[in-house]
Length: 297
Image (cartoon, rainbow, N blue to C red; front, side):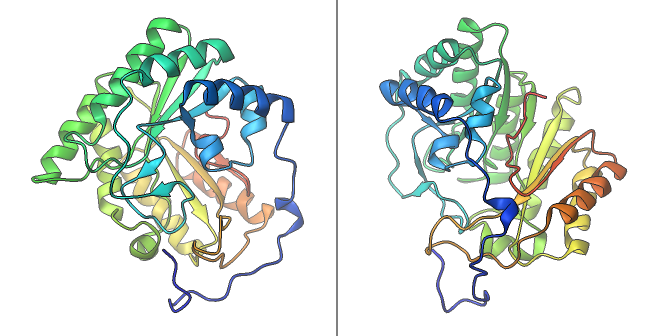
């Protein structure tokens, strides 16, 4: 949890005009909310109050949050609930997600999860169960995964490789794992995660199956410099990461890290151009971009 006694400067409280857009069509949001609420499942679109959720729903894309809404880690930027005793896995969740995908007519689905360091395999096998259920009922739907780093338990390094391998063998359309911020800020922003561990996830995917596109995401506004952002991009390209999203961090509450800077749309355009010049095949760089934004494209 953020402490006002930390080294972070006072937050910039005036929201710039380019971040005051509409959250999307109310009808699209209401339809999805009704279906997921009826089934007791979750989406990161709703849990994280994504500003693009209406647009994504209209484009037949959604991101489902697996294994409950409570995360075993306490990253200082994230709005998802934290706790050491997350809920037991719902044995009906794979079926419920598959039904929701069918009812909503989704063409592209992103499956993500809270960190479940309490589970023996970190939840890797659960990703596969949900992938299988979605494919059985929706054979034309493409599935992207956005996984945690799968680093927990004894022999964590070997466990991470085994868990990533489990998910890769299910052949997702894209494997996403977010680096989130630059190396210098990892400890204060991503508690329980490390820069090299995240790079290792994406590197492992390519080693196991080079045909699967990999993807990562950066959020800006936490005190990083342009030089650090470019260095992070270079590190991602060094392990053949294919796709990149770059968006503005927006403070969910006073208990979260304050915003240090609102990067302008022109600055995002410049960073996007640099990313493309480094060889990323797909780049989304704009203030309201989130890791699953236009994922189906």
